[in-house]
Length: 479
Image (cartoon, rainbow, N blue to C red):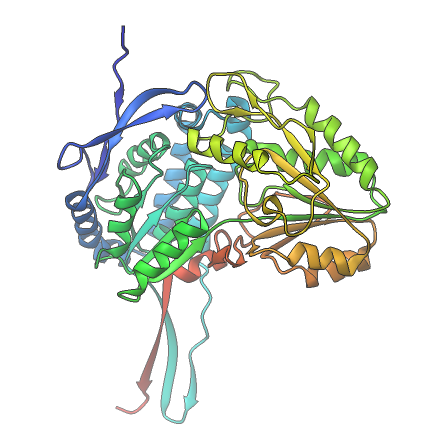
């Protein structure tokens, strides 16, 4: 006896709508491998409608004061807290994440980030007015850019939606947001919440696949496009946006080096690194999954990390003992499995290296050692619960290995030597360098990378840069 699937819908101009042509796609719970909902597979007509709604709403929202926008976003944050259990349930069904960790590790930061941007929009920086030429006064206006096309990923559907809409809306823009086709449920619920607070058209959600995203980016209405996703997706967005010179904000892949020196407390370092590597099944662009260990403590570290991996559990969302849930979809499971299958002969699987169970997309906490710098698994992003370990001889080699990949999002250094930590923080070519920790983020500090990890910053006051434009105004002092 089949169960009727829940119907998710687009949110356009203050109304929930099916796709104009009625097309849908099934949405699967990755913990069970079973479909639980359908979502619109939106096409050109749906994108046109969403962009028109956002464009119509923009002048009115642009002309509100920062204080008015702040009050609206503070109401949004309050509503997120009030409806936290609904958001958690939707996200867990979306992703298979542990319920308890979603409650403690995602809801509070999301609420805090919304509140941060609500207030930060009232403190945007600009040069003071002055007479830089005799008889003339100049000043700078900081203005919203207009309609923003935004594409969120499947690894943190709720939180990445917040990272997208909060700075854009706080700055006075209007938004058309597309969630991943595998994780639309929590974003549709967010649309319901925002729709009860914001004017019609300020926030719109269009569900769909890559083609839907392409239509959004290539549409003539948006002034900027923002995507969090793979390097391949980012390159496609940048290419599409270049045709009409749209602004582009890209937060792409990562391959974070975790540099462990010989003076560390190995047990303490392993505890922090294993949690930062396996959290969310390693499906995090900043995950601590590429460890570089000084040769003098390498063997001890590998042994301790393998033991830690064997003690970590993956499983169903309601199991309070699990650190992480399933991989997001069967393609991602296949990708992780294929990396392990293609390991070179000199590599050693110290722990894990296999699928867990035959239901859902679970993969065991895995440790791989004996690797060389040019090995595929060192150079390419696995995006799964796989931690690799390499050995280095000195600081210069550690820096060369750490920087010797095409990604440059995040990194960490583990040492008791303060001077060494400061040297490493300068030499590491990454947008973030953690010292004796890995993965914490705060709303006040920027998040974003270099090289093929993209450009533009999320969070912090820098998060407004791509969502605002600078205008010089000059006036004569003569009548």
